[in-house]
Amino acid sequence: MNRIKLAVLGLGSRSTLFYLSELNRAYQNKNGGYSTYPLWLLNTDFNSINSLLPNPSEALDYVVSDYIKKIEQLEVDSILIPNITLHETIDRLSINKNIVHPIHLSISKIKANLCKEVVLFGSLFSMKSNYISQHFNAAGIAIISPSESDMQLIDTVRKEIYNQTETKDLIESYHKVIAKYNSMMPVILGCTELSILKPKDRNNLIDMVDLQVEHAVNINPF
Image (tube, rainbow, N blue to C red; front, side, top):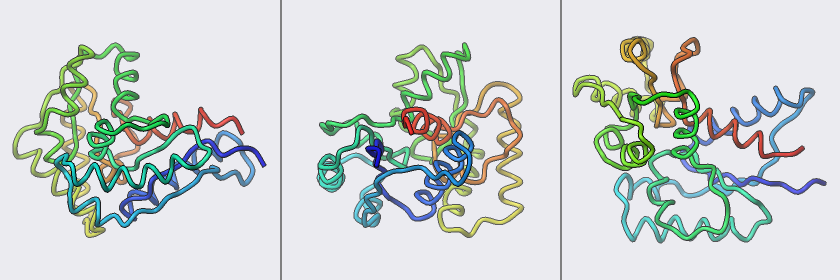
């Protein structure tokens, strides 16, 4: 048996299942047949993490670090975290494995496309905090925020998708607001829930989940 290269930290049910599905889909597209992505999954009690989000804290560091230490005992090279917001905490920890980091991958993608400005869609916390924007700004990329009303809509979409209570009308409104900003510049999705029901036909839409999945498939030599 070939050595497994990747571990996934299981978090919220829908987001984790979405990542696993996307990893399997991309891996099957690459390798054909009945291929599914070989990985280790450490499923957490997500309530112990989510109840401490979104703000970084020593308490959150402690809980996440305990799970990461369990993964570090495995013979894997990389760790994928299916939650964009949690990477601010991940950055605070000393980790001996490669992190499939959505922020770093996004910056590389945007710079490769020669973009100087992008619109960020994420949780209300992410859109208003400086965690993502400071990384992008350091790389010479300006983050443009949606209007206050659009940010409220985007955050409502995120919550409804997380709770699996989204409606067709809400998702149509979400797609329309993406199209509005996407007509002016690239839109980057920095929230897993927003990735789950994104529109499929927009070339100027950059999805952090897609970038993580693509990277994970490319580093797997099977």
